[in-house]
Every structure is written in C-alpha cells, then in structure tokens.
Length: 360
Image (cartoon, rainbow, N blue to C red; front, side, top):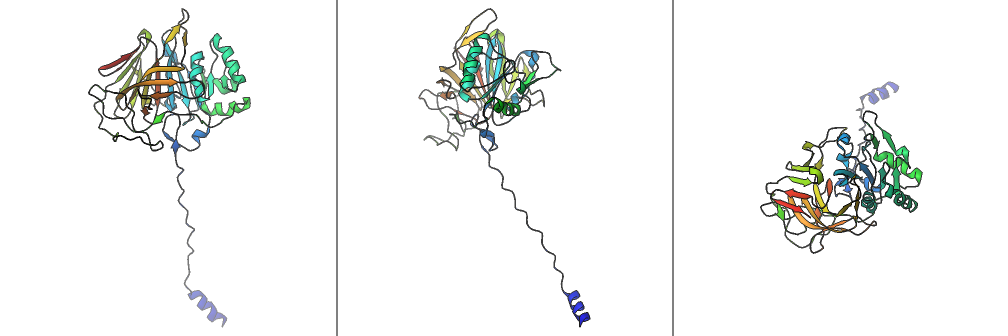
C-alpha cells in the first residue's frame, strides 16, 4: 500500500507556480512651471524660486547654470556691460555663476518672485535696502555679509569672476537663516499656442494668442498657423554691445559678441523660446556708469516667439506680483512655454527683427 501510494504520488502532474505579476508603475504626471509654462516634475513648483545675480563680463564667460534658468533678465549694470538675474524653479543646477553684486533695480526685479536672492555684495545704496528687506522676511543670500555657506570659489578662474552657488545649496542653507523653502504662489505670465500669422516682415499687430489648456480659451480663430521664414533678432545695447538670437527652426540660439553662448559645464548652447524687450528709462549716476532705474511701472515692450513679434506693454505694479505683458486692450500676450529672456533695453537702444526695428 505504501509503495502504491508512492507510485501514484510520483505520477501526479507537477505544477509550476506562476510568479506574481509586477504592476506597471503609473508615471508621475508633470505639472506646469509657473515661471515659464514648461512641464516639470510635480515637486519642482513646491520649492522657492532661486534668483541669482550672474556675471557677464568677458572673463566670466562661459557661465554655469544659465541653460537651466526658467527666466533670465539681462540688464545693464554699468558702463555698457550687462548682468543677468536668472530665475530657477523647474531645474536645480548644482553650479550657477559666476555670482556678482546686486543693484537696487535688480533687487526690485527679483522681489515680485519672493525668491532666495543670491549675490556677492552690492552698491552702497543697496546695503540699507537689503537690510530692511531681510528684516521684513526677504530671503537675501549675500556671500560677503550674509549666508557665505551658500557659495564657493573656483580657483581655476581669477577673482572676482570665480564665485558660484547652486540651487540645491541655496535651498539647504536658506532655512538655517529662517528662509523657508516654500512653494511659488504668485501670479504668472500667460503661456500657450502660437499667435496668428504675421505680415511679411515678421511683425504682427497687437493681438493676444490662444492660451494653454490650463487657462480658459478666449473666443477667436484657431492659432496654429504655418510659420513664415524667420529672421534673426539683434538687441543693441550701449557701446555697440550686441546680442544676437539666431533661429534654428525650433528655438533661438543666443550669441554674444558674435560667439554662440553655451554652458560651461556641459557645453549646451543656450536656447531661447521667448524674447521680451522692455524699454525702461535709466539715469547715469557717475563716471563709472552706475545706473538708477525704476522697474515698476508701465513700459513699451515687444514679445518675440516662433519668429513673430508683437508689440505690447510691460506692466510691473510693484514688489508683490510679477509683471504682466499685455496688448493695447489689456489682454495678456501669450508666451511660448520654455526659456524666457527679458532684455531690459536702455533708452536709445534698438531691437531688430528682420526689416522691423524698435527703439525708444
């Protein structure tokens, strides 16, 4: 009986258990970056905006981190040399710089974004301004007098063009000084599909394009035209300092002094989706060329995207909300999601797009 049972057991068909199925992970949905309309990981907008003063002296080029900036303001600092105010939210580059000093009008440009504000000192007239702002909660990060832990020097470059910070480092150091790494929650520009087809010279009348799906559409025709041949853009500053934006069919490649701009750390060329030129009066204060400028107010502006130019108005009400870009009827002009360069043009400077030129 035992043998028979054993034989029967041996004759039973073996069954191989199936391994448990592994569920397919659900992709994390991207969200809109409130600074530039691009799609980013959902955690990105939960951080505080990082704003960094970046050197643009020839010895500071190529810079680090500018490729990853969501918005870049380019403004004259003194003597015809510009400086950048770069805003980061969608990406957190580990090296950003070289970092340089602040001016009052750069502080005013940064304040509407409620950022961590990284710089290396400031003009004398800014010291009291920043002290009062710090006391009111402004997240000032100054390498010279405040938060030096957020910065380091690269000894392969000469001073003063060798000071760097990183977005992650700013987020780590900021809370130790009472600066919370809080989500961006202020108003934003409007982003969406292209505007209607322009006239032959690349310029178009004051119209607003169709907003993105995240913003309710306005009545009007579809705004998905066939694009005409796209001319390049030249922004001419004082002292024959020119910036060129060269169209490659998808974005504008940025040139300075005739050379393509690229990131120092990985050689990526700078790609720009929106160019906004704003003419703001400035007063020269001294023989060095230091400037005084009121960036709050309404000023003539031009938006260039997808090879099209639209005239409008830059409305900056004050430090509590980012600026708005509107047409003659007050409707928002619609920017292309992606990298934005805002060129603050001094009086007498010009912007050229094909046959069309603007100056104020």
